[in-house]
Length: 166
Image (cartoon, rainbow, N blue to C red; front, side):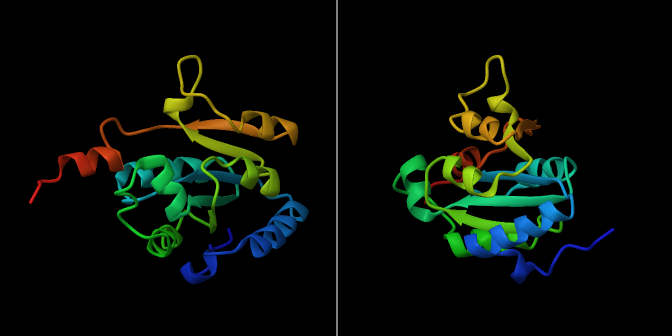
């Protein structure tokens, strides 16, 4: 069993991630991707990341930039800036690489990385799940989508809603 790299070396830019992806492909390793804002890292994130890691040999986590989070979640977000969100995810032992992406959805990132497995939360699962705009990209290179379990009632939005107002 190989040990994951030190946390600082897990935060990568796209050229480095693609270099690693080529090596992982050559070694026959199954690459799993998941992504999100990860604004306030909580137990639900950890639970989902552990489930994603069990699906393959390498877990890559894509993180929305601050501008993207603002577009997706509103002007008061993110609560935690990108650099800190990257550091927190990189510190988790289940994560092999963390990379930022600018777009609101991961289609461009997935087309570049072409992970074997793309993970989404169970709230996207058919038949009643939310739409998956990147499904066609994943299908185009022969990847597959897996759905990760969620812990009901635990989300950054819910945590922020519950905090007392000053």
